[in-house]
Image: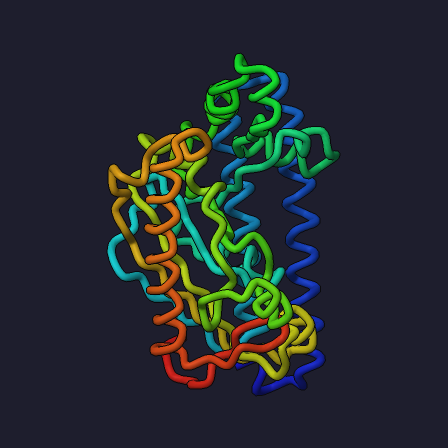
Length: 307
């Protein structure tokens, strides 16, 4: 409605202002509550922190509603907001994180972070305050030099997941490891039409550490319809017309749990399973959304769906 009453540039300015102000305000609140958590590391503090986090998520939702004409979200299966999930998704734009965080039907989205990031001001403290897991992994070379390191990365990460287990969440993993561009697609010689090659190590490690905690796997497929291939810029200019998100709810099969780093047979099997999921996702994009691959995104050709 707003886009019909105001020029695009004004809609984009308003939506971007709401998005930035929302992140600044709630970011400061989370940081301050994190300081409180240092003094009072109790469950009540975690509950208040998630209240602030959910405030940020609702603010993101408002910004998207203001800046985009249509938002279509479909779930293939039931999602329990009081459960724990591993969410995997294709990656098209910096806006992806905002979109996934704005889907309030999902438990609080969180991320596996490298252990070094805990020392980065605001980012590290905010992630720690929200109970996001930090992982510290030993390389094959380090293990070869010091066999005692074998298995320690899993135990260290499990300890860092203590707070994660206190509040229903979904761990988000952009499996391609990078935003889709036509250049990357050609450089990789990707076997998929609209996706980069999936990287299995990250989600295999997450399943190894938290497999028993997860209630399911959420396979998210994102598409945008905008004036050009630059999704964030089009959002800021009020030229983002549609966001499509399809979430396929899957069970985590027992054969998806194992030691990816040390077990070669499991590693090969896991990669095959992930490639099957990725071929299915590629087919969904091609069949349901009929996109055209571009330099920075996969655009949606059809314009049907519900708000």
